[in-house]
Length: 91
Image (tube, rainbow, N blue to C red; front, side, top):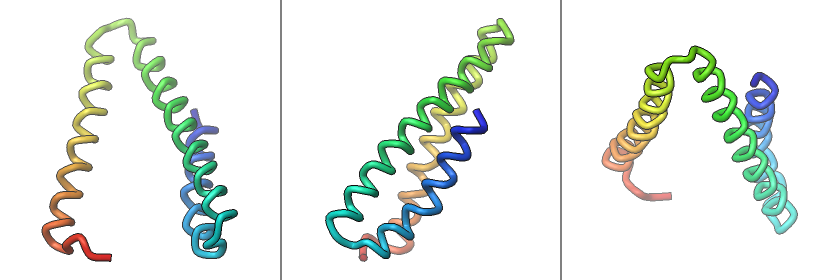
């Protein structure tokens, strides 16, 4: 689980640097491949967390995990809407 978090952290750190330095087709390809790896690491991490919550042998823990994941997605949407209202959709 910590390996995937480390991969996600490294990609999140170097992705803006690569997109700033290499602003051509090669940079786009590197960013596209990095986003693929980021999504892959995120899905592995989510699967590990779900499996870990399943170890407790009670359905209630899995319900908490899935509900927390859904609430996190809703909170990100609300924060995005607030930022769009405050800052607008400009570049």
